[in-house]
Length: 231
Image (cartoon, rainbow, N blue to C red; front, side, top):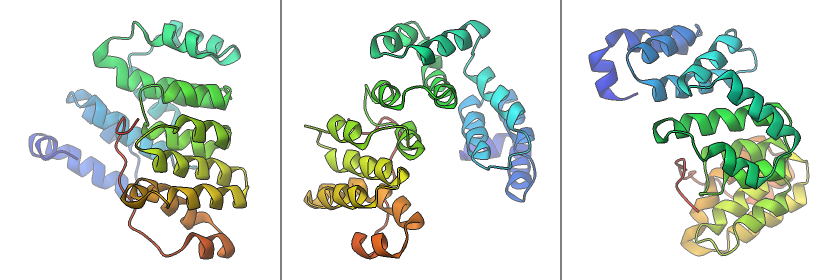
């Protein structure tokens, strides 16, 4: 959390500490939103929603929707898109979203489409049109994206090891251990650039059984991947 937030609003620190000690994240999300830190509030809400037993799921999802300035008409448009997805329709949806709302609307829309079981391959292509985002990892882990689609997205990219790492996560999500290892092996052959795949390696290692772990090799420190950082 930014120092300016905690200095200006010490109650936020207390509310976040309450959440980290097992309490609800909702009070902190509400306070951050009231103080004008919507992006921070949405980040906390999304993190809290990752818990399978999140007690305030509906309220946190509503808070994210409010921060993203989502209307009922937008939700209906997304539901229609989920039934007939295409990159062209995605461009039409996002074309007139105000710049200051784009990031939160983008993330909200992807999460909603994933919950609506939208075609994973098209959704991945839409989500990565401008580069790799943090949401690409969620899509890869969902098991709805063909690893080959992710591999193709990385063709010609200077960040190809990162895309191969994502393809490995997609294969792992489908229980295809040998394709997982094949993608990771290829990613490791790019010299210094192979560091871009370490985040995927770290996640796979934490869930893999003994044989894939042995083949992946020694542990490495995972590189941090920022949203919209590579193309």
